[in-house]
Structure formats: C-alpha cells, structure tokens
Image (cartoon, rainbow, N blue to C red; front, side, top):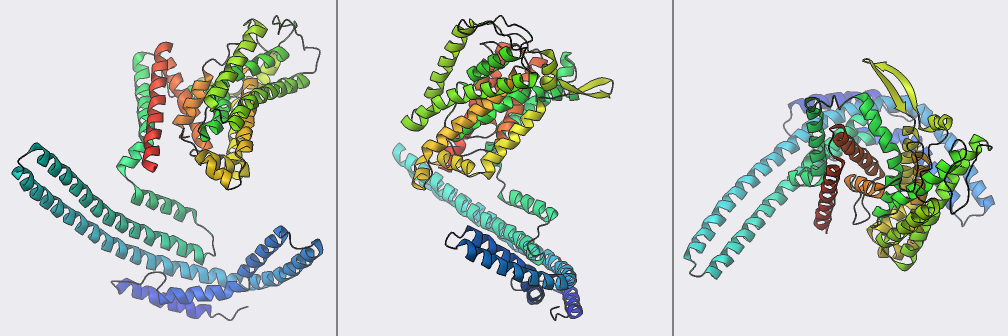
Amino acid sequence: MTDINIEELKKLAGEKLEELKSVETVASFSEDETLKTLHAALDTLRNEGVNKVIELKQKITSAKKNKMLSSEERASFIAEQNSLIEKANVIARQNEAADKELSAVTLVYANALAEKYIAQVNAEEDAKIAEAKKEHADNEAKIKADFGARIASCKTEQEKNTAAYELKSALFDAKNHAQTIIDRCKDAKKQAFTDHVQENRAIRNGKTSFKEDIALSFKNYIYSFKLSKFLLENGLYLAIALFFIVCIIYAPLHGSGNLLTLPNILTILEQSSTRMFYALGVAGLILIAGTDLSVGRMVAMGSVITGLILHPGTNIVKVFGLGPWNFTSYPMAGRLGLALVLSIVLCVAFSVFAGFFTAKLKIHPFISTLATQLIIYGLLFFGTDGTPVGGIDPSVKDLIGGRWVLGFINGELITIPKLIIPAIIAVIVAWFIWNKTTFGKNMYAVGGNAEAAAVSGISVFKTTLLIFVMAGIFYGCGAFLEAFRANASAGTGQGYEMDAIAACVVGGISFNGGIGKIGGAAIGVIIFTSLTYCLTFLQIDTNLQFIFKGLIIIAAVALDSVKYLKRK
C-alpha cells in the first residue's frame, strides 16, 4: 500500500473546514492549497492502481485497432499489458479502502469550499450586473436627450429621419454593450458551478453524480434562458398545450364526457402506433431537406397485399385480372411472414425507385415521390378496380391488432392495444440508427451540408439511397399493421403523408435539413394524433379539422424558418 497518512490529511481538512467558516473570501478550486494537497494524495493512491488499469486497457484497445502490428506482435503486446493490469489491480485493491476514505474527506472539503466560492462569485457578478444595468439606463437617457435635442434642431424631414435612424442604432449598440457584460457575468456564475461539479467528478475519479448532473443542467438552462428564444423554440408547443387544456375543460361542458381518461389515452396511442412507422420513415427524408408524398399510397399497397394474403377464405378482389385468391390452405405463420415480407419489399422497391432519381439526378424528393405516388395510385386502382379487400382472419387480427384486458379501473374496462408494442420497438430501432451508427451520423452530415459531407468522404448517393430504403422498410411494416386496424383498399392511407410530415415538423425536424431528433418525430405523432382525436371527441366537423391541421403545419414551418434565419 502507498505510504499516505490518511489521519494527517483528515486533520488538515478538518482544520481548513473550520477556517472556511470565518474567512470572507476564498481561493478558487484550482488555487486552493488544501485541495491541491488532497488531490495529490488521491493521485498517489490511484496512479499505479486504478488509473494504471485504465491506461493499460486503452493501450490494448489501440493495439487491436493498429493494422501496422502483426497478429503475433499484437498478441504478445496484449499479453504483456494484461500481465501489467493484474499487477495494477493488486495495487488498486490494496489502496481501495484508503482511496474511498480520502475521497469522502476531500468531497466534504470541496463541497464546503464550493459553497463559499460560488456565493462569492455570485455576489461579485450580481454587483457587476447591477452596475451594468444602471450604466445602461444612464447611457440610454443621455442618448435620448442628445438625439432629442438634435432632432428638434433638424430643419428638413430627411435630417430628422437620419437622426432618428442614428438614435435607433445608438440605443441598439448601448443595449448590446450592456447585454454583453451581463452575459459574461452569467457565464462566470455558471462556470463557478461547473468547476464545482467537475472538481467533484475528479475526486470520484471520473464518476458522475445524478444529483449534480441534474443541478448542472438546471443551472445551464437558467443562466442561458432568454424569453424570446424560449418562445421561439416552444411557442407552438405552448399553444398546443393550451389547446388541449381548453379541450379537456370544454369537453364535459359540451356534453362529450371526460376527455382525459385512461381509455381515451390508450386509444390515442393505438391510433398513433401505425402512424409512428410512417413518421419514422419520412423523418429521414426531411432530415436531408426532402419529403415524401407517396406514404399514403405505400400504406394502401402494403395493406391490400396483407389483406389479400390474410383474408379468411376466397377474396373477391382480382389483381390485374388474376384471382380470386385464397391462401387459407397455407400455415398462418407462413402467411404472416409472406404478407410482411411482400409489404416491405414492394414499399422498398418503390421507395428506392424515387430515391434513385433523387440521389443520382438530384431531383427533389417532392417530385420523385409525387411521381411514385401517382404510379402506385394508378396501379392499385387499375389492378383492383378499387374494390375493398375485406377483413383479415379474426384469429390473427386479435393476435396482433387486438387488445390485452387489464381489468376494471373505476368501473371501466381497461384494455391495452397490442399495436403499441411494435410501435415502441420501431422507435427504439430508429433511435439506435440515428444516434449510434455511422449511417446515422452521415444522415445528419448530408442533411446539414451535402457538399461538405462529400468533401469529407461521405457518399451522398449511398446515404440518400439508404435513407429511402429505411423509409420503405418502415412504410412496409406500418402498412402491414394497418391492415389489422381497418379493411384495406386502394384508398387506404389517404392523406397519411400529410399527417406524417406534419408530425415530424411539429416534433422539431427541420425542413432546412440536418436538425432534428427521432424522439421529436415520435412525440409529434402523438401530439398530432391527440389533436385529431380531441377534435373528433368534441364532434368538430371533419372538414374544419383540416383547418386546425393546416394552421399547425404553417405555424410549425414558419417557426422553423425563423429559427433557421436566426442561425444564419
């Protein structure tokens, strides 16, 4: 064990703690001598133990990636490092108790010092802020007085306009100067708390604290908060939240009943489940500053195929004169697999068709997907004469599209929709692709600046085409599940593309490209579905519902455009 006198260090920390109570000013974390001494002791305990283990493991990781090493050299090097790790682990175990005890002592002292130091910084910066505000008020009064006299002495309208413009500029400059000082003071206060959190992490040898992380996030938010920015980023959500509150209050008065009930919430989630797939698909295209107008027709195509294969008996629908169809002689598992695969394959095929023209010939997705929409629309109605496929086998419909009975709550039978499960899985898969894969990073790069992405070695063509493939897979899965909710026909999914696009925009995925999160798209689907459900629950005419949807879409895009212009 390393020769460290823990008792002596504890005594030193205790004495300094008492001194902290009586002193008016304290040194910063990096300048406090006691904290330096305690840190040095912790480093001595860790350098040949836990820190050595981390260092050696990093060397092993680098060696595994080093293509310059032969397999024999790599194996020899790794074996050597593992031998050193075993020795370091022995030292780490020997110093573990002393490390834990000294860490606790150091944390107590660091927290006491932080409390004093943060209060000291806050007081100093608050005084500077007050002084800056007073100075700005004086400057503003002086500027107005000076220009007021000047404007009064102007003889022509042009001179007055020039003076008024210069007055406005001078006031703007004075306000910016004061705001710069205030922002610097806020940054200093934020930095003091950040240093405190980082200091504690160093004492714990890199381990974070949930409580400290939450506090740090809150401090960062408070110090960087600006009302104008908050309203710009959240104004739409505040308006939607207000709308929902009004609906919840108005529903009982209108005689429609209680809107905010568990069965209603579950129904909204059920209606959101299949739409989630369409939004997840189109989200990737919006991320690269595109869109997809073929979603609704993809849904119809996949639903018709699924309905034909899973229909209980002979279906009256003929496809391009072929049929009637009867798949009941095949095992249900095989029919399910065939329906899902065909739905995905057809959706991917048409999606790639549109994607090729976008990726290769730089045709905007609006045009390529519009063409695809018309092609599928024509094929479906010509091939099936628009005849509804009918329902699918009741046994399998309940298996996938039914509900689990939860029981009675407050006299109401509560059932959980099964379609929620595949929707949750789809969101998790999409989140993983967007955030944890190279393809996901390339999507953001291409969406942000395709030319810069190409220069950095990213294949824009491949990335764009893969986004269309991913979209087709999501559409195919969603279309397959759609058949479990309603009877499929060539008209199924009418207008779904608008709902999917609107959900993504409401969820914060920018039409300007490169900005957005998959969680935003998921939340957008639920918000937009809830909006439709609320309007239907209140018995608002379907035609009027389009007005509400249109207003939300234009508001969301307008706010996104304003934010984009501000970023530029």
